Image (cartoon, rainbow, N blue to C red; front, side, top):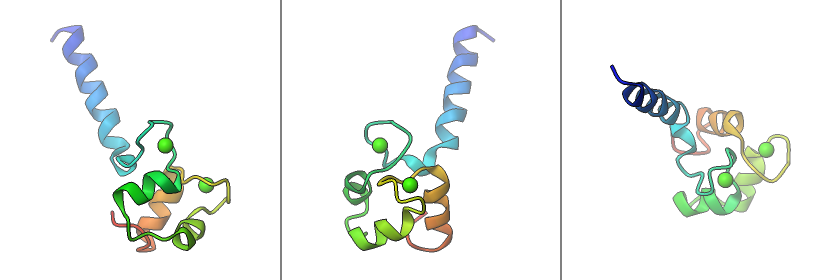
Length: 75
Ligand SMILES: [Ca+2]
Ligand SMILES: [Ca+2]
């Protein structure tokens, strides 16, 4: 197995782990309301605020997971 192949596998694994942040257009690891609504137009600003548990204006991975578990965002 070449180093390139190993690197590709690691990259694929990392991508799969963050699959729930596929809406993360700028790749900063959190979702702004613009990024959320680009993928889920039905999610209102009010819903976004509900999902933003620490009220920092963005959804991190844990908040996205919690929102999906609560049925606020499609998994
Ligand atoms: Ca982002
Ligand atoms: Ca947040």
